[in-house]
Image (cartoon, rainbow, N blue to C red; front, side, top):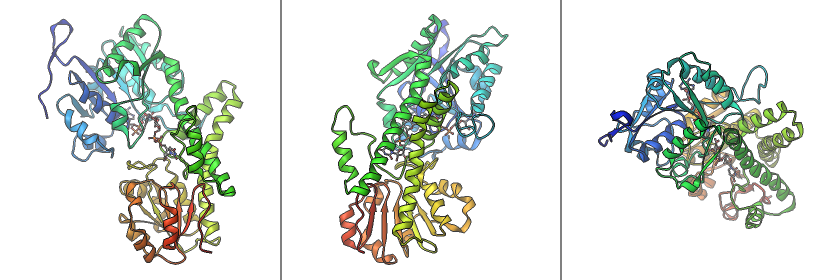
Length: 471
Ligand code: NAD
Ligand code: UGA
């Protein structure tokens, strides 16, 4: 811990230059605020949450989320100018700027169920701010929200009789899990939207100034508040669309003996297309792609744009199809039955370098195989606790094993579901020797050397490439 920086504020008050609050200490609130605090020692940054266990973890050496590099950033600023607390009301009173980073899941009830964003946590926060604020504040939407939510937020907040004004801005977060710290350190862009009134522009400048402490000015984009809100949904939709597009091509590759990695490389060399997000896979997961696209779909429908809605919805439908196609491939290639066969799932996190399993394709695949009465064994270097939670209702139809070699022992098949580096380096000859024969390997991430595995004796089924079979 380093000594706090003390500044003289306007009016001669001694203290931090600004008091920043973040409501919501999740995957976004925790890391983003830790980065702001680390890069801006002149600001006091407090992160509050109603989840006491989560806050206790942020205060401990065992942070509540696994993210490479996060420990160092937190350690640098915690108790200096970064604080974690459950005192939401006090935090609101003290803050000049309030970032709201609460969860905005898909609604599961009533109108828009399964598509619209569930804004109950968001609205509750607005009402809490309204109740406890006693001076003007800037409120920043960090959560991903439907376009025009800032309008509703401002209506709630400015319907006060305390003569307080709130300026509501949008500053969506583009970090990806597993690379959150590098994304926050050197973001492609920071997007800040505000109303284009004098007050809106002034508030926008305050937020720009925070990021300008470490982000080059040309990477900070300013826009109107609606463009900012919509850009976040559109960015996730475009990213997911690329994955669904390459996944459709993967199916065609399997029929035609084209190789999806070669096709992706060839098309990605076109600078208009670019190489990123063209890795065919078992499907995209994560807490946001599906929810944000479905939210976009719902918004389009509500504006009468049914063709636009159908276009984006197909991105999610193709993803679901790709997941079910993977289960079907396992079933069909293992002689149309997996009943009683041990199948080891290598990886459960929705991507490498995170313990997060939200919407992980592995959940769907584990369930699909268990329904076929396979004996499913799940292993993962970081996500086993979450995997247990996701599959609690499966009882003894699913087992959990931290060691991949033990998971593979006696298995009829392995399926790579997360692209963890550790799975690239396993001793597959040893694994092959410990498995039932014929041994199958389904590489849902195309990370292994398929020809070598075939030579070792495996029957290998990659994504978007011809299968290598000994029969
Ligand atoms: P999360 O579920 O990990 O964290 C949200 C936190 O908000 C929870 O800890 C919850 O207890 C807390 N919370 C809810 N209501 C509260 C209240 N009234 N007062 C105090 N705390 C409250 O969610 P997340 O993954 O951090 O996502 C937050 C938002 O950011 C979502 O809108 C998401 O779409 C968006 N987003 C997420 C990511 C990501 O990688 N996870 C990336 C970009 C944007
Ligand atoms: C995604 C976006 O990349 C972030 O910009 C955004 O801020 C975030 O969603 C959000 O709004 O929550 P994230 O879901 O953390 O980030 O991770 P990604 O790297 O985008 O991966 C999402 C899924 O797509 C993973 O399951 C990954 O394995 C899969 N994927 C990704 C592929 O199958 N192929 C690819 O080429 C890339």
